[in-house]
Length: 205
Image (cartoon, rainbow, N blue to C red; front, side, top):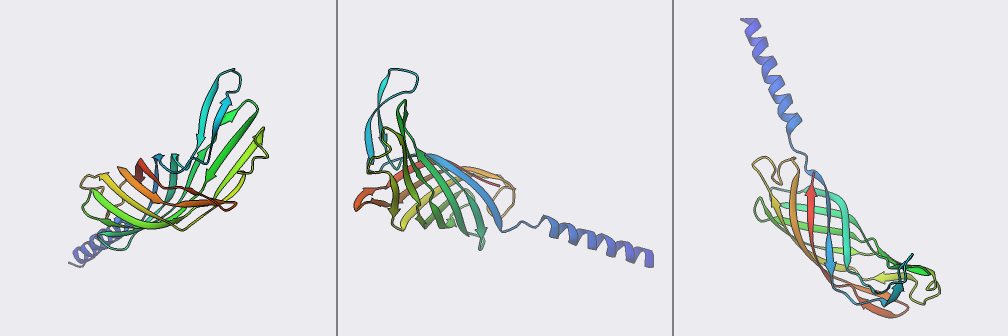
């Protein structure tokens, strides 16, 4: 009889231990990115591409490809807080010079999981942007740091879910995102609109 009691106790302990092991963490990492459009043209002109005689126009804007890495913390069944660091670059390069407008925004958003697939978020971001130049345009007055205001961010995501890959679970999720940013850059008392919209992809893991 005692052996049966010990066996039942052992099985119960193993089951409880396994349940604790597979309990989902409130933390998830994520990666996101997309293509954005909008904002003022900071600089434009023409360049001769390196190794050719082809002259092509270019524009330096706050749009273009965007990338983000960060973490997602679940406060409850439907509310999560998300922080990230991003990167975007606009860098036309010619045979006798180049420009690089680089921006690294830091964002904090709060998301409401409306369903297992649909989530909407609002938040703020602070950008750290700078224009660098080489060659012919190295002395252009637009080179240097670009100050930004504390900007607003709105984002809607549609996540492709299965029964075991929901916000409350630890399985990876992949989805689509639409986001808008309301932002202004200032350089030497000249202001540029950084407002843009972005269509992209997100991955939670």
